[in-house]
Amino acid sequence: MNKNLRLFYLLLIVTLTAAVIRFYQNEETGELRAVDAADFAISDTASVNRIFIADKDGNTALLERTDDRYWSLNGRYKARKDATDLLLKTFLRARIKSPVPRAELDNVNRLLAGRGKKVEIYQGQEKPSKIWYIGTSTQNHTGTHMVLGDDNGGIADEPFIIHMEGFTGFLSTRFFTDEREWRYTGVFDYPGDQLRKVELVKRDSMDRVVMMELGSNRMLEVSGAQLLTRQDTIFWQDKFNLFKKVHLETYNNHLTESGVDSILNQAKPAFTLRAWTAQDTVPNEIDLYWKRPITDTYDDNGIKNEWDGSRMYAHYKGEIVLVQRFVFDPLLEGL
Image 1 (cartoon, one colour):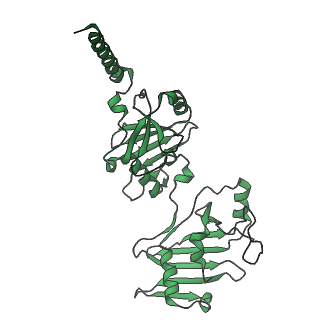
Image 2 (cartoon, rainbow, N blue to C red):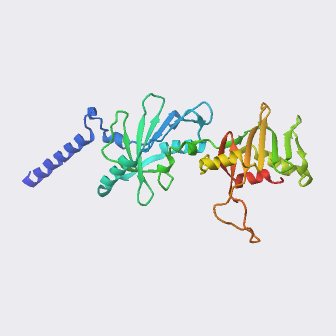
């Protein structure tokens, strides 16, 4: 064996030894092994029963699986099902796209330390089965910088660029902490045949009312002054069915405290909508208020619109929220 070949083998052994030492350091140091540091996905998302998200500003969101189809949020509210389902899908399909390029490593680590979100994923145990630290997106927005941690405070040496199979984009926006954005937005939610009665009130000087109610024969009975304009059965049956699933847009109303007070104590609702199941003695109720437009808009005749054509304010269970007219206008048609 010539001298150059012996030198080559010596260098190879030294390199491999250094790699093994680096990747499999003593667990007492709290560092993760490389085989674990690359293992982001969770194959059994049905066993995930708790998700905790925290950002660097001190905001947190605690999501816990319940016996209901909805998760609980911070022990107080229902969480949006679409958002919790999206997290579970992300846990299942997260894959390593590539290591972080060496030239970007220092900057990525700095951003992870300064602005990264911590996500603890629990699978029925007291300690999290995985901890993700989520940073910024890549420059082309097709991946997200992430690194794994452990419940002893350890963190992997190097982050990775993570993407989700079947999706082009970054993942960090799915892990938000604003309680208002996490809250379940259902106003009327009556699957199957639960809905029995609906009342629509136009809050003018007369407070005109339309009532729709299923009789004992399951036939829809409609009463009210507005029947003078629309009397066809299909129109009212379709409207009644719309009330089985109605959502507000967001609990983040973007109003100041004085703005909220003005609506609650000075403004008169434009409409009130009520719904009952067979078991309800008190209706589920929402008041709708016209909203001034953010910018001037005009109708087909060039007349400036007085009200926002996209959104309305609403008073629902003691809170002022935003609703979309795209959702609520069909409920009000005929009034």
